[in-house]
Length: 225
Image 1 (cartoon, rainbow, N blue to C red):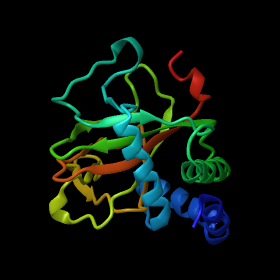
Image 2: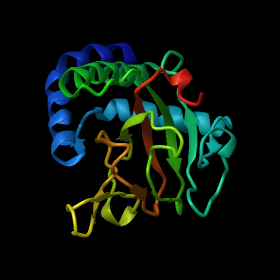
Image 3: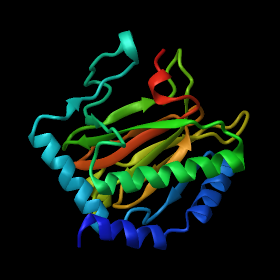
């Protein structure tokens, strides 16, 4: 089946209005939401194969921390590899995903008045033994990341494979927070408030793939100005 056929099938299958409603409700109630089977198995396989090809061609770079002049690679904090995605210049399956995100983003603006204007996204590969220590997605001097989204591309992921997304959920005033672990299973979309939820990626015991990005309250090219 070619990628054009995938687009025709999945645009008809997905009720993006209902998905956006579910996301808005989850963000309002608990600051995060999980949508399973957002990507279908064939889409997952195509995107993951594309990532492997990019990695072989040397187009992935070691991920770092900090923005602009404060950027640094620190493997004590994170050990993943990333490739930034241009939504207008990538394979069809990834374009389908980004087009769906745009529709959801517009719906969330109507439902939640978030003022979202754009997004940024990269492919992420965590080799065996990689992790990303606890952090918040908003930079210290830049608060334009409003929502974090992750879509996982890992077939037959088992609990013993590690690599869980651990988010730290507040219990309220005078109550300790508690960790909540999310398995990175294929096709699963996770979204959460970038300004509220600290999180980490636990050590991976096999290679782990994801699409990772942020919905912004200004245009992407202005984010670091």
